[in-house]
Image (cartoon, rainbow, N blue to C red; front, side, top):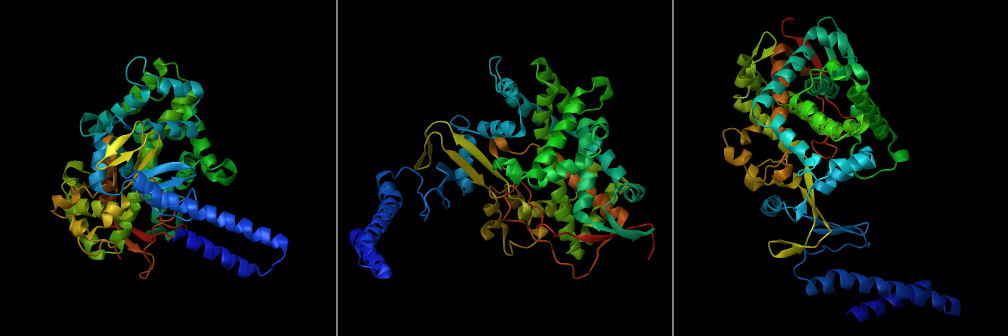
Length: 497
């Protein structure tokens, strides 16, 4: 059968060229040989080899060597396994010996510019646990429920409450498009970013952080917009804006860690302790800045986008917005948030989860350190493993009908849905995001304050829902397509009319 197809292809080439002289005969034979080699390669790769190695994940057929589609693909000559079912993901999470996340962190350190000496120090295990794993322990101590999370929450609330006053908005937010003394019209995306990113900067690092660099927030947002280019190793000339933003943040953090401790006494628990550990290992200001800048990135990159999408969905669902405003009203008194009471607001929590379900594109990765069984398959040593989560969030058998639409009631009073193994907006296993608790608290606080201190409405009643930029790689919550936004009219509730 294969020989017959090869012969037919050669005949078609001969007829197509329609030139019997000798040089073109050689051309036909050459093209026929190339075609034959291609057919043999394709047959070996996707028919014969899978039969000979039934224990390996099956490679799905593709037409061009070194590119492909899931379940097992080859990208630039590198074998990549993709796990798409929650059942298999659970098995991956349980294996922390032969499946490792360390290479991903090491690659980020290199991409951010950590020195060779700093890299060796961060991964040195001569005294037991390496500094990378110490940092992970300190993340958990700071961000998981307990005294340090409660302290951090209060730090956030002070900043959020101050930045959401009418006076602060008029005086500081240069993105106000137009307005009058009684109302303003602005970009919701920019507003969320200009509230939450500075709030996090001060909550984690203290007031000195914003004094160091007046462009800190703009640099961060420029970097974050195209940060996926860093993980894909884009050259600088193709990602100038992203690298410029990253460099600006690195320089700012280097100056920050060059300050005497008495000039920055209000850093949070994590920053203080981890800096001390790095100093004891004689790391330079710049290397300390780069390692903690990673923490700054992951704790800032998603919260303001979740806030934007949640408020956007509510503005397009006025009945739900009204219900959440009523539910959260007792939690907001004189511009202050009662966080304990707010966290009991079940409809707001359901809307938060529904927003994550619709907008999260989180994924995780592992390196296969040694050949590893995964059910009836074998993952080969030195290959990569990718766990994308987004496809899990649209299974009707788990989340019910209309899975592409915003319906927070699917989570309301239904722990089976929010606790489902198919709901993974924050990943799982050793890479289960420890920042999920503070992200939820800061977003819920912003939503409650906005709905109870202001009248919010769309600039135009027929304003379209922004589109998710699903074609751009994302490490967390998806941004809107460039040029898409929610333009909102904001008026204090004390103003009548």
